Image (tube, rainbow, N blue to C red):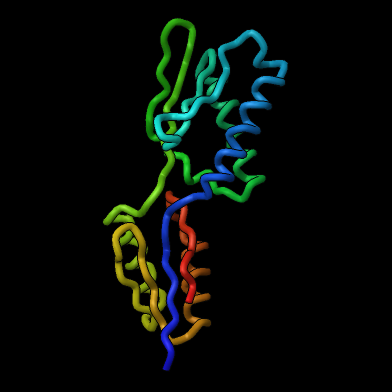
Length: 164
């Protein structure tokens, strides 16, 4: 009997993220309510995240809202944004570093494996680095696992790759 598998990873499309960044930057430049303010968006080192810059925390939220809309249009979940860092304010300027969540940590991989084992005993999850490989004898079982993970309320993005 053939075994089928797929990998559960936490990643995002870097090209689409670049496009969302460019569109956000263009909208900030053209919006009337941002004229004369330091509102901007910049890449963090190695494009591992973004830096939101504005006059105050309220404008930071507005820039973040624009970015979220651009991500949604490009089918990227806003869960990829790590919003745990605080907003810094100094010299009539506010900024927030927002790194991207990329890769499953060991504890996140364990929680994904537990969800799979609890809901689908026939599927066998195994942690392989920053991915979880799910193996089953039935393609229907793997589809059910994907649906279970899609509806699970996790605070990090999941995507499915390497479907065989």
